[in-house]
Amino acid sequence: MANFLFIAGYLLIGLLLQRSRQFPQNTGQILNAYVIYVALPALVLQKIPLLELSTALVIPAVVPWLLLALTVPLLLWCSRRFQWSRSTTGAMLIIVPLGNTSFVGFPMIEAFFGPAGIPFALLYDQLGSFLILSIYATIIAAVYSADPGGEARRPSAWQLTKKIVTFPPFIALIVALLCRSIDYHAAVQRFIDSLAVTLVPVIMVAVGFQLKFRLPQEDRGPLVGALLIKLVLTPLVVLGLMWPFGLDQLVVQVTLLEAAMPAMISAGALAIMAGLAPTLAAAIVGYGIVFCFLTLPLWFWLVNQLARIT
Image (tube, rainbow, N blue to C red):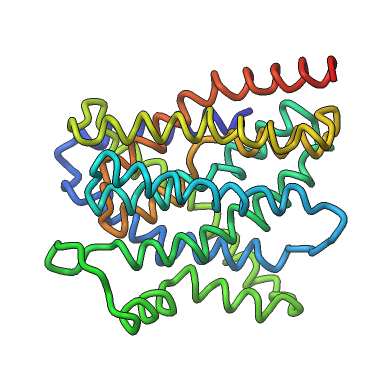
């Protein structure tokens, strides 16, 4: 559980730096740029070659994609209903469908279920969350990001394709897939690992630097909606979907808890880097991590209670 203390420490450092005059106002954007161009591609190169495809465990691999298909129409409806700005809509489409299924997810799953739950969590994260981040979130960022002048505009097909194929994590994904059968040299692997390990500290310091406890009025509604969808509605949907499979199965319980994780840190960084509602994006990630310490134990307790009576 030391990871949670680390997260709190990184956030606190970011909050303290926010109040220091030694760091310019755009420090958060600079840190996010490092993540997008260096740390996140390194994580892609580190994780993708470890994928082991199997038809035996489809539940944790399929559920994230199913949730994506259900969440996107809901968010688009909310955008029209509540008249969100284009920037807010893009940020919500990137952040809300993606959960923090690794850095928060892995230690939580091990704490609740022990080492036996980790393989299912890995499938959920690597075949679901991580691929969705690399493919879907890249496209959304390209479509909704602002132009150099600061105005959001719909890119042409060529501009969209160019943004996607030149996006560093996407390039890293293609390289990693092509090199799956090739073992990295030991020195190269250590170099990649050393860069990948900087991802969470840098992102969380950036989130802390940009986290505002007093949000603008227009961001408060989307923040509440994002937290309710991520921490309450999404696991509730998965609970209904998994009920026929038997709630006493470990794979079902792990899948439900992974679906209940707060917003993915990397998704928040991607939205901020694309200029999509950076204050809102940082708030969804930061507040989600805080509230998950309450909601995840409640979901774990509920699933166990239901498993005993079914």
